[in-house]
Picture 1 (cartoon, one colour):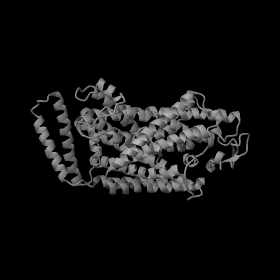
Picture 2 (cartoon, helix red, strand yellow):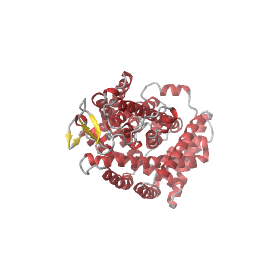
Picture 3 (cartoon, helix red, strand yellow):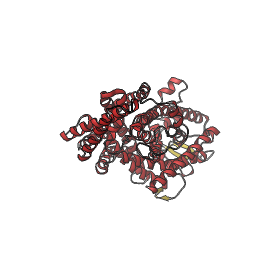
Length: 534
């Protein structure tokens, strides 16, 4: 056991030994200077040591941004832009506090959560809720897998019925966008009644058809490929390619928002941005008739760094070597200086990634508000990807399908891939915390590979049987919103009860932690209320 009952992390060779304050860590099986490195002091040296935040960013720009953020924009218009921005920024202090604890004690997040006071049934109650949330994360992954399969089914249908279904849907979306353009330019345009009639006819024809099997066939193929790649561990090249595609698609989205300003019928006006940042709650959408707050708070749990990523981030920090480079806590000035330096590196890492995913999130939201909300389209369970594709039609026209589908597939699949890798590490660690394995490094590595191989098929089964990708992602978002205040409380516990006296932050940092905790409570309480009411 570590200091004050904190379990030790055998992977890093740390065990408790008596010292001046009774909380000194000594290396159990490695030399004292093994892996210890001085933190970088130059800008280039610091930038070269960044990485965990970019991995998280690659995972973040996925279901939360592409699906939920645009869904909120479609339902709420510009009203909730303030909530989206806050959702990206406010969680970073909690993220860094978890990572600070990891660097100080070399301990995994689940072991740290297991030491937080509270009721226990074999493990801490926080771990039981984390287990429940992780089950819903698999549901979310099922929705993402379904979205990726839908993107491929639209671009490469596998059946004749799928091709005909695509034709009808493409024609419907084209008519809806054309109708909006004509109504904005000239409400008396004689072509408007014909477009409205076409929309009614096409909607009826689509409703009479059975949904094609193509998305499910593609999902099966994707699950099998992903399982093999994760098991053999040869996903570095795919991750690099997917990250490049995600970055490119995000840039295209930002440029699309800028290009909309050249088209009067789609341009975002200054008063709309002011309204979006005015901290007001939206009315029910006048076009869709939907109150968007349920989706909004579900999105809050996922956008930016979600609850799952808050716990996942320190695992990547451990693999990056921040804790090893700091070395075991020995009470010396050298250790304190190294810890401060590496904590500074992870702070830059976390804030840099926040800037990246905030720009992406805001761009997706504005696109959903500027296009989907105005024509009354909401990304829902059926044809979720096709509805999202409509956002790009005003700028790219016929080319929108190719541009969007390639980007959407990259965004969704990279999220599936990275999240499966990260969650597999957490679940393997949880097996040790629950006492199901001996939690040795070799045992964790073995179970990580096994879980990685099974994870895509679990997501596939849930997608096939639930068949509601958007709802699956929203449900996971709500569960993560409820988890946020629990993690905020744990971060405060780490700050006031587990912090090294030499590493105490200033009052501004403490204020940020408390503000984040207060926001988490509001969102969590609303999510609980939503679940009880619905």
